[in-house]
Length: 323
Image 1: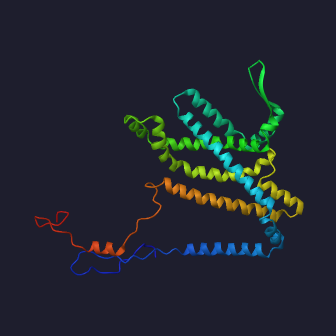
Image 2: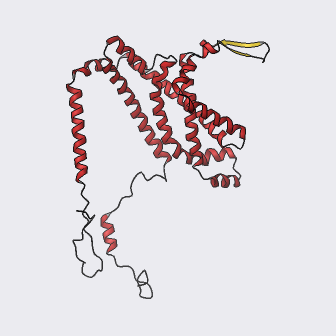
Image 3: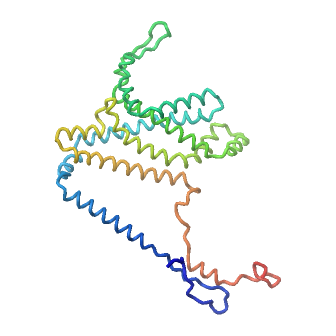
C-alpha cells in the first residue's frame, strides 16, 4: 500500500470528528535485507567453526596466558597515561587558542600544526632515538657551567618515550576538539556571567565547560578508543610489552599467527566495548535537558478521549475558539 493510512470508519453520531484507522506502511525490503544479513552471518559462522586453520584450541590456550594478560595491562597503562597528558595539554592549548594574547594563539597553532602534520609512528621513532640526539639532559647556565645532568637513556626509557610520544601527538587533536566545544557555547553567557561579577575562571569552570562537554565528550571518547589501538605502534620506540607485540612474539614462537591475532583482536574488542559503555553514560549525563534520548510516552486512549471531548462553553455561550 502506497499510502501511510486508510480511512475505514464513519463519523460517530453526535460528533463531527472522524476516527482514522491507521495502517502502517509495509517495508518488505527490510525483511529481505535482514534475511540477507542473517545468511551472511550464518555463512561466516559456519566458516569459522568448520575451518581447522583457525586453530581454536590454540586460541583458547593463549587467551588468558600470563604474557597476554600482562600485555593487556600495559596497553591500558599506555592508553590511560597518554590520554591524561593529552587532555591536560589540550585544555591548555584550547585556552591559549581562545586567548587575546597573539603570542599564545600563535604558539598553540604551531603546536597543533606540527603534531597533526607528522605521523605518530615518526614521532615515536624520534622519541625512541632521543638518547642519540641528546645523550645527556643538562641543567645549567647558558654558555656557562653545568649544574645538574642526567643520562637521557635513564630518564627517558622506552615506557616514558612511548607515553610522551603518544600523549603529545594526541594533544594536538584533542586541542581542536576542546576549542570547538568552547566555541559552541554562546558568547553572551560569558558576558552575562561577567556582568554579574563572576570571575572569568569561575565562569569557565561553572558555566562554559559543563555546556561544552556535551560537544567535547563524543569525539574525545572516539579519540580514546583510537589511542587504545594506536598503542600497537609503540614498537617504534621500541616498547615490547604491549598486547600487539606480545601476541606477535607468541605467534613467532608457535608459527601460528592466526589464532594469536584473534587473541589480540578479542582483547581489543573487550576493552573497546567497556570504553563505549562508559562513553554512553558520560554522554547521557552531560546531555541532560538537551538530547532527546527517550521519546515522550503517548497514551492513545487519552488522546482519543480528548479528541471526542466537547470543548467547554464560555460565558457568552460560545465554545473555546470563538464558535
